Length: 267
Image 1: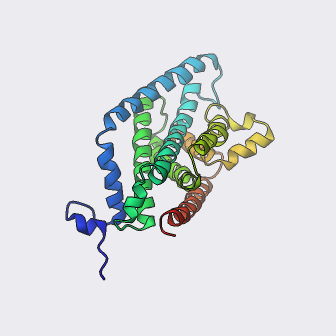
Image 2: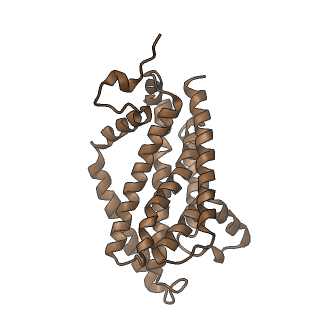
Image 3: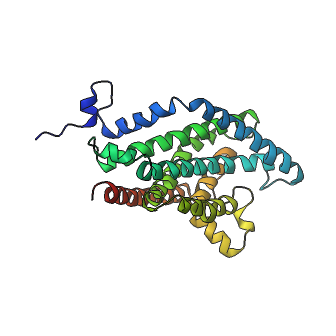
């Protein structure tokens, strides 16, 4: 018996690469809701830059590391935006696709492989990360907070950071029995990472234990790379070390997520 993929049955209008067919499913849905997202994507950076960079920065007379607090803060906020968008898009949407609306079960019956389902949804999450960080980068450029043309490197760095965060969170959201566990993830992982990963103040000012915690988080590596790019300075770690560390998180997260998806949908 010849197995026909969902793309082949749908005709020429749908991509024949299965993961792209899954991505197109999410893009079609996003086409109906993107206007609200665009508004928040530009409003949030403006309010954040005004509140933290301009408001709080007025009280930081000496600046940080030889630059104004606004210029120092902006790359941390961009990395934090990528981190939070990746987490938000990988928690309740994934859980609902398993437990409530069961979209994944319909897709695996199409038939699609679990790797296609996972890859297509992850691609949509990275699309959301890229568009959100691009909006933030544009707003901060209008405020004159970018000091180097290397600031454009923030976009691929944010995508890699998003993948390093989203892939393991996909595995977690697919494995937990209910949404209360997602609240625990935000309370004990997302919020501490945001506070202690060098977004709002230098990691070097933390006690040794918290400093090591910051270095272990993928967010700090994204923050350090983004800060080096927007300020035109060398990062604290080597660029290669940062990229390899984020790649390890992404690869391990993909492996775990694919195992959990396969167990939930096939076995």
